[in-house]
Image (cartoon, rainbow, N blue to C red; front, side):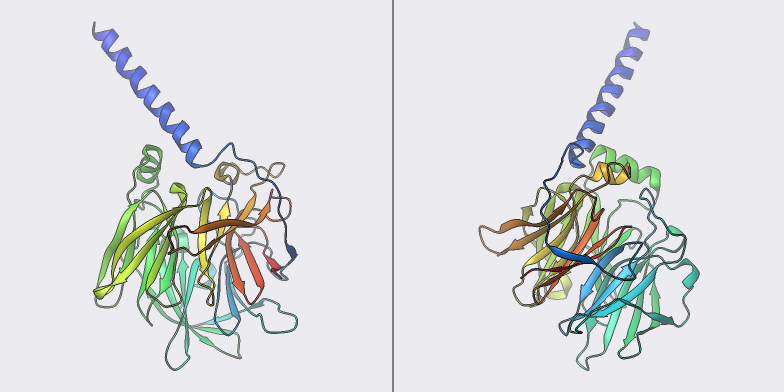
Length: 353
């Protein structure tokens, strides 16, 4: 009888694990194939190893983080990551590398999500998620206009900021940040992912306080803010959802609703005129994690119009099977143009008109 019970327990555990792996494949959209839908695009010069995140100021200055090295994903250069800027109002916009000054170890610079904050004096502060030695910290820079220079001001670390993916700045030293993993420990994180436990969160940081302001995400990824600064948008990448929150007094967040997108959407950019959300997405995450150059991970750009209405409109704006652009992460619009970045590949400059 004891042997029968042991065998039954082992069989039950094996069946449960098998079931969870099947659910993980479903969440990864492992069987999904896409139909190509291209725009009039060309590759951006100087961007050879990905532009994981891109953000554009109202005056047309675009910032790009490049060269991300992330556990579990491929990378093709051992050089440190770099930051670029390009002026979209220039007749021939070209990314230019930003010089970084200050006390920052550039040899281990590994930039991920980024956000810009412009104060009342029009000074530009660039917030960059950095993973030196695969740690998690946030760098704050001052952008020196006209000199293509970032002056490093501060490095921020905190136990609650343990697996930061993306960030949205709301002050010169304050921001919301997403943790895309439940724990900094890889084994514990794998178990929570396998079990489908929604334990990821969003953290608010200021010099006076640090606290969790939203939770219940399978994996909190991209984050951004509405043009009127009233709403915060978060991508639950494994849940295939965009969650909408309203900012309340004391930087509290109140969940309003979720919008299903049917893809694994990474970063969120917001059109500063229309308020439309633009999402860089992974149509099949299994192809990304099991990278095969013969069957590369594709790219997908989604747009959400009228997200606060009863019937938001989600549309495909760009789709590729990985033979033009692999593993798109961000789509940033500006005045009829669109920049599309990727984890480790290239970046596109597209015409929407």
